[in-house]
Image 1 (spheres, rainbow, N blue to C red):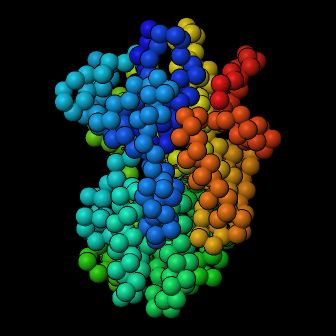
Image 2 (cartoon, rainbow, N blue to C red):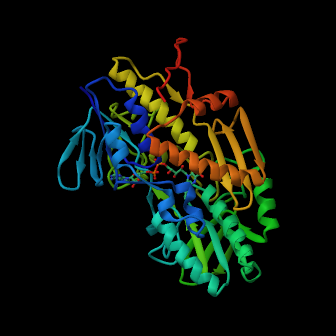
Image 3 (cartoon, helix red, strand yellow):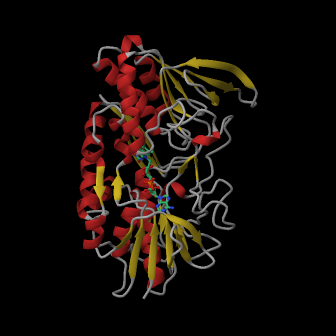
Length: 435
Ligand SMILES: Cc1cc2nc3c(=O)[nH]c(=O)nc-3n(C[C@H](O)[C@H](O)[C@H](O)COP(=O)(O)OP(=O)(O)OC[C@H]3O[C@@H](n4cnc5c(N)ncnc54)[C@H](O)[C@@H]3O)c2cc1C
């Protein structure tokens, strides 16, 4: 019998537990360790922050689903991973031993790295659903006494889509409330150009996003480094290509949401050989740690180097579809080990993204996610908003059904020629999952 432990019950970890259960031998067991019983669909957080969704609409209690799928589900956070001892240490001191561990802990939100940043200081956050709820309360108060808004992302951020989405969604909501004319808006980002997204752009996201910002009268500052956030203003440095400070901006605001830098979670930080200096998990092209071969990792917690040098640090995003490709590869690779074979499946890291603007949006496909690419496509339109609403319903239904990739999703992706995994070497056929 083998014990497979999945640490983290977010997007990657939940799907990982589902996909892994198709790979087990009769006596093997999966344990999923979550930070509570509830799954939250983070892509809908921007809607929660303007009152278009309630928290309960995007949450799923996983307890019954995991029981039905025969997955042991522990709902209190782990304290520390012990890769030498092959165990996950819980807060109460108990050890959960593993034969194979999949780390899916997402990021720790590093608000503390910038003075005044974050919901316990002066800026709102949409990175957790609870934060988004608090951001909505602050937004309601703001609408009673409107003024300037500053939105965007801090230096070192590796998740830009939600920052753009939220800027456009807020603009849409302010227009609906007929108070947009009282709100000067500024978008602040460490990206070297608008639409870079940590990916050096996809298709023509530069022109698409710039023109959208211009159409909506949102000013922007790129190559931006936030120095300090005060209760009613933000000190921002604009950095030149040679690293010198080109301009200093003192931006007043009455409402602000800034995406924070990410780092690895405390349960893994500083573990020699497991993580990089920022606490992200080292993984080879099979999602396997090079120093602890029993440890795999998926999702935002995986270490991926930046795409290239930028004047201000900009991280590479790990988007949903890319994470799903890591999940599928990891499930097959651990399955292969259980059957006495070697891991042979590499994820494609393809990215399909829908960035919603409330009344339209931008869709892009980056295949693979990192350039140079075979497919590098972006388009905009009202259909993107509708597609995102449809995707939310579809994804939540998948989570509730305990399914990672139903057959019709697999069929559609095949028709679109957007695979999640590379076919193994030696001409072997890619294994099929039991949906
Ligand atoms: C606001 C927002 C919107 C996004 N929108 C999109 C989008 O539209 N499209 C897209 O492709 N991507 C989007 N993303 C990016 C990405 O898809 C999500 O961040 C996704 O949730 C990442 O999945 P994950 O499994 O890596 O991490 P998470 O979903 O963050 O899950 C990690 C889980 O591990 C838990 N955990 C951490 N430490 C411990 C511990 N010690 N013990 C137990 N549990 C622990 C956490 O509580 C969390 O539940 C968005 C991200 C954000 C923040």
